[in-house]
Image (cartoon, one colour):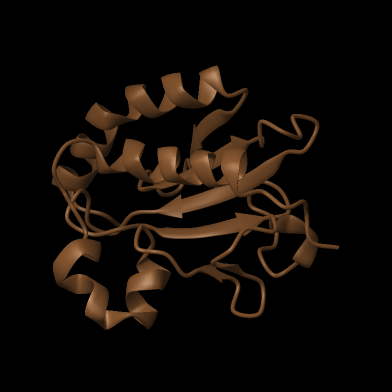
Length: 146
């Protein structure tokens, strides 16, 4: 379970994320059993009929990036090809996003902890992560894996 500070800071930053997702036809839900876990329903701008489900799991907010994975549904499986969009860096062979906004990306690239790819905990990192996901869906989306 996340610390009280993590949960309070997430709550304070949540409103901006809800507004962004609402503008993009998406949705944000907080997991009842673990309030540091969020489920996002997201749609690519070029394919609004497609719905993707993303799980964000924060361990230490805002000081560390979340675990980010696509799932077949809310609380569904992540290890199904069809749950994942085709986007560079979104790897179905490892079921992760190898980019410097995910815990998985930093786990693979320890060199990212320093320099230009270092995690930035200022501002609203929750919003930054969701904006990055939405931008990738809107501008780098190549379809859904089959």
